[in-house]
Length: 344
Ligand code: 3MF
Ligand code: MG
Ligand code: MG
Image (cartoon, rainbow, N blue to C red; front, side):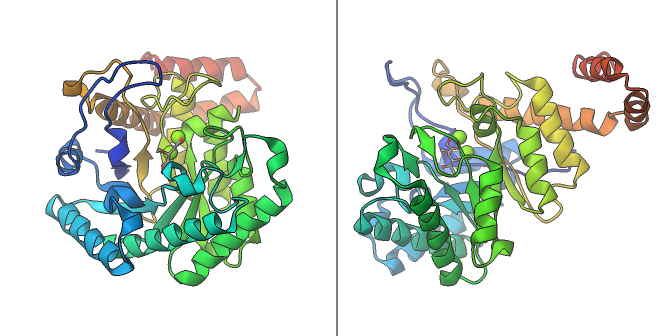
C-alpha cells in the first residue's frame, strides 16, 4: 500500500502523433478516461479549464459554472476528487505571445478572465488550487519584452487572483523553455521569489515537474527539497526526460532511475501528502504506442513510483550515517546502486 494519493490529468491519455508523423491512437472520450483512472487507483483528476468546460470562451460565467457542476457529478460517480484547475492560455490565439506578460493589454485582460473562470471552476469542482504553467510567459525574441516589467506583470496578475478569491491557492509550475525560448520564471527558485513578492505569499507556492527541472539542467529532487524547505511544495508532476532536448514527458523513472528514487525519497522523508497534496503524474505515451495500450505509461509510472517508495522505506540510514562520517561516499553510492538493482 502506498502512503501517497496519486492524481493524473486527462491530457495524459492522448491521441498520438508527433510533428513529423502520422496519427497513432484514437482520442478516448473524457468519461471513459475518468472511469479508467479510478480503476487504476488514482484518487484525483487534474484539469485544464477547458478540459472541464470545453468551449469556455463562448459561455457566460453562469454557463461555465453549470458545466463545471456536471463534471463534479461525474467525478463523484467514480469516487474521484479534483486536484487543481489550470488556465490553458497557451492554446488560445489571444495569448500566443503570452498571457499575463503579453505586450497587448486586451490579451492580458483575456488571460485574467480565463484565470478568474478557472477559479470559479475550481470552486465548483471542490478544489482550492489553481496551477499556472507559464507556457508562453517569456520571449521568442529577447528584445520584445522587458524582463523587469514582465516579472512585475506576473506578480500583479497573481495579486489580482488572490483578491478575486480569498481562499484559492496559486501553484506556479516552472519550466525554463518550450514552447518559448526563454521563460521569465523558469525554476522553483524563481517561483519562491515571485511568491514572496505577492500580497499573500502564504497562498502562492509551487508544483515541480521532474522533466522541467531536467530541462533546466537541475536535479528534480533538489528542486523538490528546496520548495519543501519553504513549506511551498503543493504539487508535483512526476515524469522523466532524456537530457536537454524536446519535451518528452516520459514514464517516471525510465531514463533517470536514481534521480527518480531521490525524488520519492525526499517526498517520503518530508511527509509529502500529509496536508492532502497529491503525487501527480504528467506523462505521455510514446509516439509508437497503440490505442489498446493508451494507459500503459500511467500504469508503469505508478508501478515504478510505488517500487521506489518501498526502496525509500528500506533505505538504511544508519549505514548512510556511517558512510558520511567516515567520508566513504563510494560505499554509500554502491549501496544505493545495489538497492536500485535489487541486490539489497
Ligand atoms: C507542460 C506541462 C503541462 C502542465 C499542465 C498543467 C501539459 O510541460 O507540464 O502539461 O503540467 O498544463 O499545468
Ligand atoms: Mg511538462
Ligand atoms: Mg506538467
